[in-house]
Image 1 (cartoon, rainbow, N blue to C red):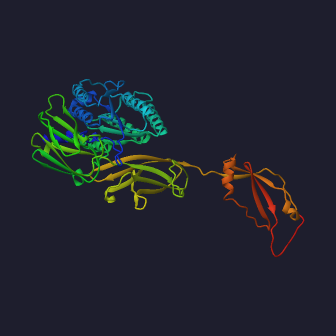
Image 2 (image 1 turned 135 degrees about the vertical axis):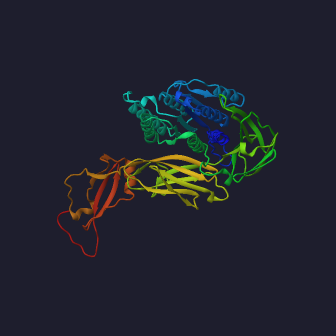
Image 3 (image 1 turned 30 degrees about the vertical axis):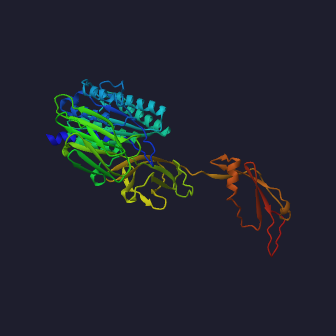
Length: 522
């Protein structure tokens, strides 16, 4: 029983870590999280609702004060609940979540409300990171067989939302967490339909699970990805923690934004911080409790610097008022790392970042860490396209990861995963639209041209109109074109090209050689 409780406690622990973009002390990028919370009647058939409620409290306690969080209970699908993350009010918000008892159905309108909340926040400040998380143990009522057009409406609404976010260049991360145990055949079919729509229209992550242990594992992995943490290996391999008596010693080779001590136990007993290594200071502390008769309590203590500056690599000590139980303590650290993604045509010497490229060209997908650790070998990067992952190569001169791919006829939509095993994992999206190669043609303005070869020194021109895709080129485009344009002919005649507006005047000129041959016609 103890093992299960410990694992369940971690349901949302790693979701706490705010999206950090520190490079040489720059401030963290704020994050907007909108979560759809399944409090339907089926959750009450077992203890899942208690753990889900406890996990939601954990999420609220662990978010950064600068973040913005709201959740939409499916029992109130039209009312997003905005949660205050200020130090003074957050504990009251956590207590209110623990007292929540309402439960009804599973309507898709709850997801629509969450999307509308994100849209409003994006209009206020689109430079933040946006996370749409849906946590459900079953299919939406809108996909039931007697609901006409339900699938089409859901598909259209999700596709439109994603299109609007892309057009505004909003960094959106959709995550669907499903709990699929004890579903009937019809419910499974409905849920599979929704998962496919989610992946296709939202380019979203889907984490299915079965059973309590499966739910915990899936949610932990997703939550770790949200927090830019590596969910596939232990943090102990990179960041070392040592517990002796009342002290915990943390050694990190990387810059950090914040350290967090998370304690869980079957009884209420909070740690009180007594002493910290400089320049650390206590930021905030919160308590959480699973609802009902579940004996599960949590204590979250945040430690940062005075001005929330970057915590430099080194060793730090935190001392509390009582001996620390190793089994009940988790030390979470928030990486102060980030990277940029760009896509460009391999033949472009300027490496201009573009999202449209001609079909057939070689596209380069590039990921550049904003700040490198002492050992660059810590980093790994891979590209994900159509669900398949490919390793990126490292350019030691330019300090970038890169991957090359041919542009076909279809849209290329993918992700770049940057990873430091056991410490950091961050994902960013990219897309490359295929554009047909422009068709260059020349329209003859002059008709039935004729000139005597004896008069070529003073010949009149014949006029051509360059066209691009059937439309006259601009004067500036023609100017650029003529820089790399000439005339080839199997006749012994030279040609002179001159630009007049958007047209090209071609003058035949004499060709001089050791032997002169003349004819009467040109």
